[in-house]
Amino acid sequence: MSRVVALLLALLALLAAGCGSSDDDDPQPNDGVTGSRTLTVYASVPLQGEMRQESKDAVNAIKLALSDAGGRVGAFTINLAVLDDASAEAGGWDRERTLDNATTAARDRNAIAVLGEWDSDASALSIPILNEAEMLQVSPASTYVGLTRRGGVAKGEPEKYYPSGRRTFARVVPADDLQGRVIVEQLRAREVRTLYLANDRSLYGKGLAAQVRKAAEAARIEVVGDDSLEPSADEYVSLAGNVRRSQADAFMFGGSVRNGAVQVFRDVAAGNPNLPLFGGDALAVDSFVGAVGARAARNTVLTSPAVGASEYPPEGRSFATRFEERFGRAPTPMAIFAYASMDAVLTAITEAGEAGNDRDAVTEQMLALKVEDSVLGGLHDQPRRRYVTAAVRDLADRGRQAEVRRSGERAGVAARARPPGASGPNGRLRSLWRPPTTVHRGHLAERTFVVALTTTNDR
Image (tube, rainbow, N blue to C red; front, side, top):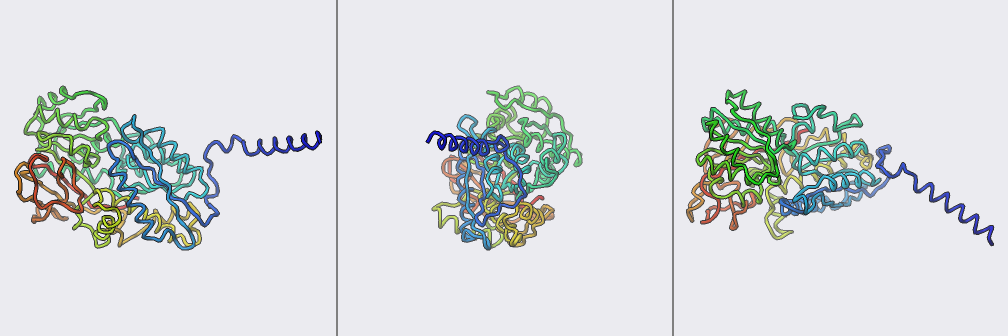
């Protein structure tokens, strides 16, 4: 009996040694073929902090896209795994959780794609891990230029994000070079000749400010200040003083809510009461709109890739209707991009045919995707130039109609319409899908602007 026990123990030891090999502790790229007819799409989403409602709607939009496909693509069953990349301590996306999520997906032999990240700085962390695993990654919201091409603010971009030497990342939003040009077009419309820039030291913030500087200089707008701010500062009164002394005609901040944007706008507005203030798409969220205050909001201009419901094709308007029917509320503005991301992945798997469980094949199809009838319209290489400018005026006066100026491919085209965005009952940014026709007392102050871009897959 003792000999049998000894043999069994020896066998178990050999098995344990094989299963516990250190080579399995890190995600390793395989041949890219899952070998399974059941595939998993991961979504890495900030479910805590400033973006929790937007993220909840994004997850629901992804579920809706999968449901619309019947949970299958050809011979493949598609499962969804949602991972939270945020923490309460960070107040939003968290570095360690983002890395953990990417590692989890990379280790999953049945994983075919990842939807995320929402923040460009988070994407910069996860892309290399997923790239080594030959995993397609599609972001609904990361706009930083350097993730996909040169023109960012960090050295070695974009090659540094792709250690395999192959591109595996795509997005369904236009990059910040377009956003920068749109901001500068708005500056020129206001006859701005001098501009003060600031950023929150993030890749996104520095990158957007750099794109605005580039476009401003091309338009012969003088940049009279360019500061990188401490994101954890309690106040920015000295910045406000610098802006005032510079005699700038406008101020533009590249950064996010988690990095002090609300206080930046409050302090700069307090020290410069009539100065136009500009911010990027990261600020077109409830947590900024509802907290920035009337004084700053009065002269604030924001850019966002989310346009009004009427600006989307029939597929986009149908999405809004079906979302509300299923989840009992209108989607927040960026939810449609989450839907488009999942829809694009499912389309890429479809186009790969029998190779739909081959990561390389699916990625290749995604990067070559030419879709004309997505919820966003056509997904193409070059961004569209058309955008919408919504001027929401007299918000302090109950019952006053909102006024919209709409710009087409040629500037100066004007028309009246319902606004693509306005503050809601609690100072929140209402869904673009059901904009109010009247504005009520106690919300954002007069002359808040939202500049909305149309979208493209910037591959």
